[in-house]
Amino acid sequence: MEKTQRTATLSFDGKVLELPMLSPTVGPDVIDIRKLYAEGDVFTYDPGFTSTASCNSDITFIDGGKGQLLYRGYPIDQLAGKSHYLEVCYLLLYGELPSGDELDEFESRVTNHTMVHEQMHNFFRGFRRDAHPMATMVGVVGAMSAFYHDSTDINDPLQREIASIRLIAKMPTIAAMAFKYSIGQPFVYPRNDLDYASNFLRMCYAVPAEEYEVNPILSRAMDRIFTLHADHEQNASTATVRLAGSSGANPFACIAAGIACLWGPAHGGANEAALDMLREIGTVDRIPEFIARAKDRDDPFRLMGFGHRVYKNFDPRAKVMKESADEVLDLLGIHNNPTLQVAKELEKIALEDEYFVSKKLYPNVDFYSGIILDAMGFPTSMFTPIFALSRTVGWIAQWKEMIGDPTQKIGRPRQLYVGAAARDYVDVEAR
Ligand code: SDX
Image (tube, protein in one colour):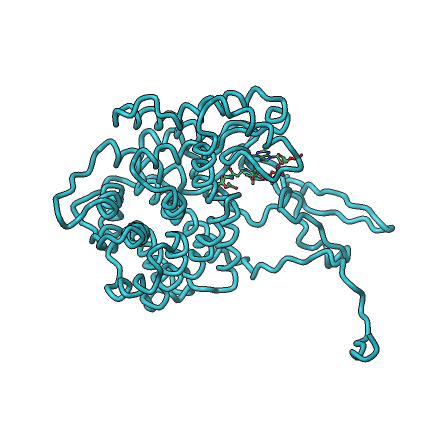
């Protein structure tokens, strides 16, 4: 007995349309409106995509009501506790957890692509020293297509794979170079005997004048931060990467577009803004003043690190990050960190306030990450580059899924036009 196709009936202006309904593995059903314009001569209208699925995907799933995040079905708290970033990269890219041999081979491939073309050192020197590292990263990653011509043909699966490995491997090197350049220190080359997170920390903090020993507490915390930020469904920057990729642009250009979008304070730039906000609040007794501002509709101020389009419960990443913040600060011997105290008190007060409760505003991934990164010695300007470094694997996995979908078309939204109807030109003398 063939399962009957469920449909949604849409009736207007004497028309009755039967639109197919599609069911996911988990989450809301969708109404397939691909034929709506052809059959109904109307568009749908959803400027912020609050109710619109732009693709089908089997990579990541968020249950905003439960505060659940799954990478290929595995809960984020389990991966953050039991896995490590390069294993999570393998999972996101290829869909399954690797065997021991598969993981060794993958880690070896990534490790052997961590250096950047030597000419890129000159490219960095064209920037002002005080450029924001995100500005540098957007420029350098976009320029990678000028250095790695042999992996820009998106129709060649092998070139797609090489470009993917190159981007994952080189992002820490590029982010560390952006940091070193901004503080006037020499670039540090990657080392093949270090794991991914340790390599990044060493490239950021080693100086030629002395040996640098990676603190295992910091590298474990760094690796966990990378994992927590790796992918997140069709967030703004991932949607940007998919849209850029749908035109056939090369992968380096697409990832540069994602970095540019992530930079916004409503998105990945919130981690830098959240720590700056916590520092501006300064002491617990000033929290009510900022809560009042966040509730004032005439004040554009928002509590950075709070709220989310999808999570209407705790962001599970924020929970893991909060636990890590306690652990890292304690292990580093940083007790009674005033910023962490303000963060915890702000969270407590906000979550008891009717405004935040009614709007289901909870701390998101950006609320606690800055506290850990600050304790690790990073300036706030490096917070979003670290987010971009972590998210690169998610952008690539989503880009590869889109490119590999035989039904994919160039993304080209329509609009609700509210401008002037056709009218004739008027000579300046007659105006
Ligand atoms: C990330 O999409 C992703 O998955 C993103 C991300 C990822 O991993 O890729 O999770 C990473 O970007 C996390 C979010 C980081 N941004 C911030 O922390 C910035 C502060 N948050 C807000 O800008 C806001 O909450 C957003 C942008 C995160 C979500 O925006 P929405 O879903 O469009 O929500 P909204 O702006 O429509 O807000 C709904 C209501 C509004 O009030 P009303 O107009 O209904 O009266 O809640 C209010 C907002 O004013 N509100 C806030 C608030 N966030 C929303 N009020 C005060 N402080 C806030 N932080």
